[in-house]
Image (cartoon, rainbow, N blue to C red; front, side, top):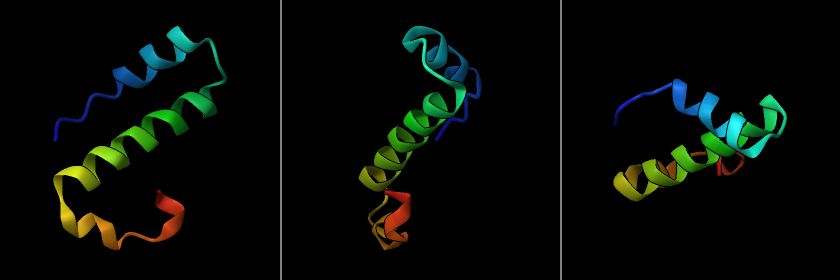
Length: 49
């Protein structure tokens, strides 16, 4: 999977939310994508979801 930190900046700018919220949203989306792509990701701790 490609890693594009600048996407986090774009998300924060579009939503106009706090940086922490933008990062949390981006991380949640990445986690969903990883789980969808890799069945083994289902073994992650619940707090990652």
